[in-house]
Length: 111
Image (cartoon, rainbow, N blue to C red):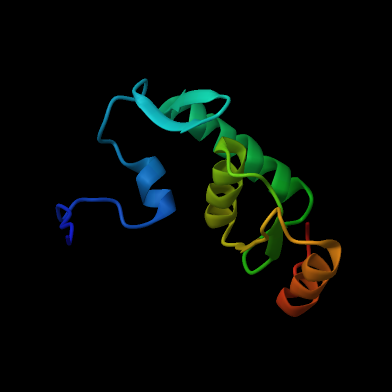
């Protein structure tokens, strides 16, 4: 079944966070640790963005993300998007040889 979205539906990660629609204290993202509202998640993204910027991540930087599926992983993806960096997603089940190969091929500058 194909889903159609309204014309004003946010089409990028940054647009989704910036979207004025919705209650800022309504549930926004959930994981095993709990549920974060839009405002709290946005603060997580801003902290992740500041941390990445502090270590030199900027537009075009490849950042390897080897994280479990949780709100922190999603915040890191959004932070990369805010900085114009490329998030290289690494499966946490990969062995070290597979990770090394992926890092070499992706030329990730930060892990």
